[in-house]
Length: 76
Ligand SMILES: [Zn+2]
Image (tube, rainbow, N blue to C red; front, side, top):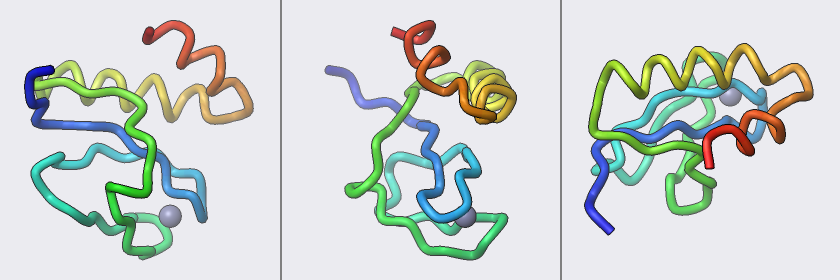
C-alpha cells in the first residue's frame, strides 16, 4: 500500500477529529492539549491530497454527534 501523507484521527479524550501528518509519530490535540501517539490511534481516513483530507475532516466533525459509524461506512 502506498504511503499516505495525511490522515484523520479522533482524540480519545475529547472526541475532536483532526488532520495529522502521518510521517509524525505524535500529534497534539488542539482542543484539549492531549498528546496523541499515532500508532495507538485508528486512522479514519488517509489521503495525499490536502484538499481531500480537509473535506473529509469537515465531514467527520459534522458526523461526530453519534453518527461516526455511518460516516465510516461511506468512506470504505
Ligand atoms: Zn482532545
